[in-house]
Image 1 (cartoon, each protein chain N blue to C red):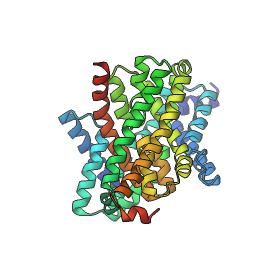
Image 2: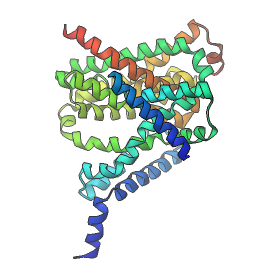
Image 3: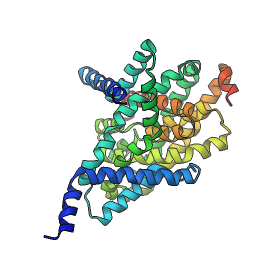
Length: 239
Length: 120
C-alpha cells in the first residue's frame, strides 16, 4: 500500500492530529485577534472554529472523529470553571461592595435574556420545541441543555444556540457598552457574563482582569438562577 | 502546575459528587467553583494556583473551539429556522447586555458604591 495513505489512515484516526489541529487553529486565531488589537469582530473562537471546519470539510472527516482528539481540550472547561474561583477570591472586597448591584443586575439580566429570546421566537412563529431550546441560551452549556431537555426542547440545538449567543455577546459587548457610556469594568464584565456565559467571560478576561472576574461571577450566578427560574416560568405559561 | 491542576480537578470532582448525591440542577464545576472559593477564603490562595488559573482563564476561548465546531452537526435545523433564531439571539443578546449593565450602574448610584463610581 502507498505509505502516504498508510500514514494518513494512522493520523486521521488517532486523537493526536485533531488535538494538534485544534491548538494550531487557536494559536493562529489568537495571533490574528492580537494583530487586530482585539477588535470585537475578530473573535478568536469564531476564527479558530472556521479554520477547523474548513480542515474537516477538506479532509472529509466526521465530527465524531474530530472530537476524539478535541475532547481533551473540551474537558478543560470543567477545571477552567473551577479556576474562576481564584480571581473571585482575589477581588472579593470589590465584589462584596457591589453585592446589591450584582443581585439587581443579575435578576434584571436573567429575566431579559430568557423573556426576550422566547418572546421574539414565539412572535416569529418558532415551534414549542425550538422555543424550549432557546430558553437557556445565555447560560453555560450543561445547564442550558438540561433546561431544554426538561421543557421538551432539542438539547443538541441548544448547545449550538449557546455557542452562537456566546460569540454574539463577546462581539457586541464592547460596542454596546461604549454606546451606553458604561466605563466601569465591573459593570461591563458582569453584563458579558450574564448575556454570554463563558465566551463572554473569555472576552472579558482578554480585555481586563476585573471585567473577567465579574463576568465569571455573573456566568455562575446566572446559570444557577436560570436553572431555577425557567422551569417555574414555563409552569406558569403552560398553566 | 501539576499541583494546581490537581487542586482544580479535586474541587471539580467534589462538585460532581455533591451534584449527583443531592440531585442539584447545576453542573458539577459550578459547585466546584464555590467549594474552591470557600477553601481559599479559609486557607488563602497558593501562589502557583494563581499562575495556573489565570493562564487557563486567559486562554478560555480555546476551550470553546471543539463545542463550536459542533455547529456543523445542526446545519439543517438552523437552516429551517434561521430567521427566528437569528433575530431572537441578536435582539435578546443586545438587550440582555444593555439591561444588565444599566441595572448594575443604576443600583450602584442608587445605593452608593464609591469604589464603583471611582473606577468609572
